[in-house]
Image (spheres, rainbow, N blue to C red):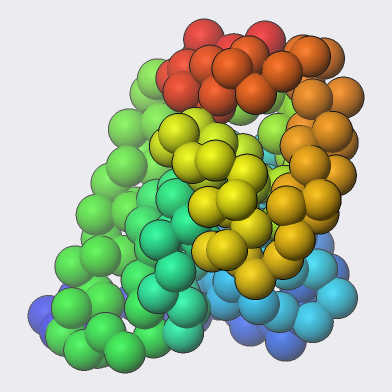
Length: 181
């Protein structure tokens, strides 16, 4: 029990690559993912679940409190982003709310762009930062990488989106999921 809510755990996976087959087999209402998992990271796993099982709510549970990681997870379709330090009494209501959002999504299907599933975790974080208006230097400093690395990721993002500049990429990221192509 988590607070007053009671949940049935229908499966556990220890690596990201094991999650999607388990979701297909058990058809849960909600999946709780760690952001950093062996094999396939949480954001990539989230994208795959959203693409193949859009009615399943996904909650990211992580030790990371980085705003860019939170923004990237929510932009990729997470129903919630929760730090592992959360009181277990608070996790139950979060899961209930995530399930309710998932059920609402079944009534009103949300189309996610196929291209978003092709982003790496780092590209998703960089794109979220660009959408927030951050400069390459600010993004590099927040990720502890060089501006050249940020430019490299931006080049990949532009290619995957079929755009030629950061303004177009930011506009794509700012559009609601149903407005994206």
